[in-house]
Image (cartoon, rainbow, N blue to C red):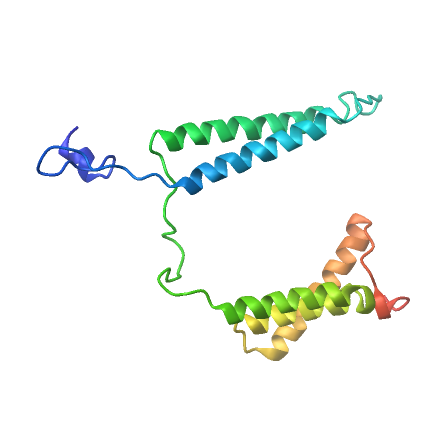
Length: 183
């Protein structure tokens, strides 16, 4: 191997004795392979249990797309496993602006979890517009925003927009809660 290739980082450079250092493999990448394969198998098993009802409008029926997706997931899992075995690995998070040496901010994580749990508890009683607004507003505040009025307005617009987007655009009724008959 040329020194230019070694300098470019294609392979580890030999030490003074001429022997190459042992390459360490990240087992987490094999975990991704296993996860992809399992998801592919689940999709295939589910797809093969579908009835193959063909109509004039849909000559293929419901089976082909999930069979294709499940098969593709398994092929990708095998291809990724081969690539990892050959020494390919994912790039480090170079674009993130986080310091990986710092511990997790457990307070923020727990507060966000609290906001999500509050949304789950309140959505049936208060409805999506109010609980969604609290979800968006609470998340913004927990994540450090200090523009209280602006965040409140944005939260209201987001929750109302998603409520009507689901109702009008998708035909899915989100719970209206205490605003039933008003919205």
